[in-house]
Length: 429
Image 1 (cartoon, one colour):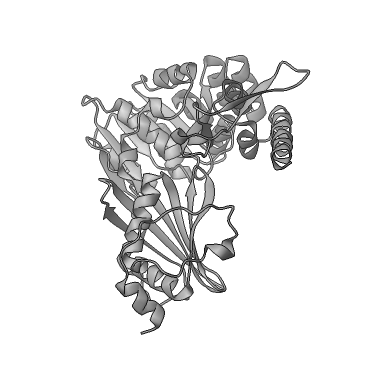
Image 2: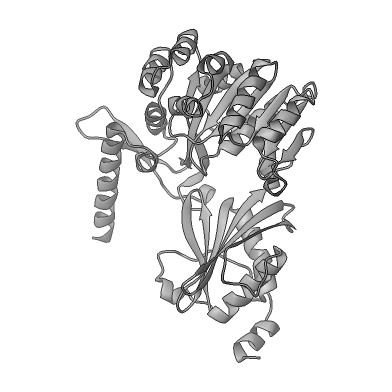
């Protein structure tokens, strides 16, 4: 046993703290820690408490680096000596049921932790071999997220009214669109919790089941058994559900079955990968589904992305000289942990299918033509939704510019970045 390993076995447990990421990384190496088993648990507790979405443990040439992703940003937690990092990775691999001897191929696992902070968290592990060892990604699923409500998503008042009206429909198809990590699942769960009043039979079809929802039936895709979303959906329709949630529409069979379910008395909520609400419609049509059936079934589309929400206690209003425009920048206070932001919030684009849009979809119009009609009928584009939130002090122009391309937002972001650099130079002077 090395002196380093022996020292770690005999020292007291030490609380885990995030380091200042402005500190040079080479100075952040801390070789003396508590046992890997204790560190592994404490790391998950800290990450869960701070609402981190992911934890990454990566072997580098001279150290093993632990990072977390919180509010969309990656932060360093620790740099560990390689021997300690290897023991930590092996501990996590063993917990997840991943072979600790085979480091030559990718592997996946999942485990549930009951943490001391009264949180039950599922951790989905993915491990990849790298040039210096391995990279472990851990996606955290805090079970309290399953209790999310519509009011928690981040809709403005009018947006919330439109979504709630869509959900009053007894049947039809509602799509939730966005890229990976855009909060689609959270929005779907909020919709399901809103609908779950004890008077509806609700069934979800997921891959995998991310959160347990009380009072809701949940089924999981089983690829090894040859049971995909379309198979589950077909079987679910015979169970007489009122509401069906489809984790993802990714092929023609699932798309056709979801549309048919929406036309036959079920309210169907489903996700698709798309960058705009009208693109989501076109993506379904690209599966060569019957556009007349789709136009009859479709109630609406929520396209969304996630951005950081400014802390209302310390945000700073910035006026643009010789202009009526303004925006807000992040401050620092105890309320937000001196970060300037408090949470991730939804930036939505809500397509409420009107009679004109129904006709347009049935006619086979392009996404641009659909968008023009939708705007004329009252849809606020993603960029307009962002501008409204920038003006209201909910988000910064810099964050909005990171998730979309719009010249108005880009100009505001450019001004904000320049103003920030100028303030930094003044402070330094």
